[in-house]
Image 1 (cartoon, helix red, strand yellow):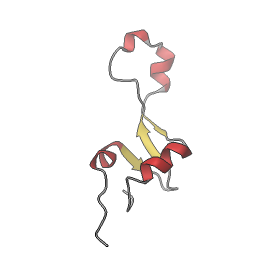
Image 2 (cartoon, rainbow, N blue to C red):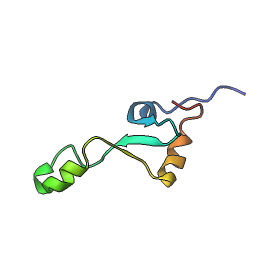
Image 3 (cartoon, rainbow, N blue to C red):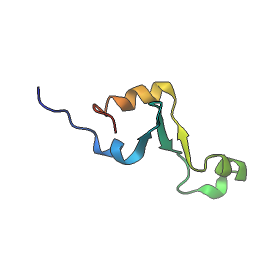
Length: 66
């Protein structure tokens, strides 16, 4: 069997934690921030651990991990 390719966009956007969960940047932080509350901006700082359902989908694009 030939080797499988990893989606190059996934390599750039996600990191795996030690327990195999996925970390990703939070959406909604690029523009139009004046319409968001300060609490929203503060809580979405940094990265978040993705849900199990989303993690299953993204791991299909990572045949050999990161």
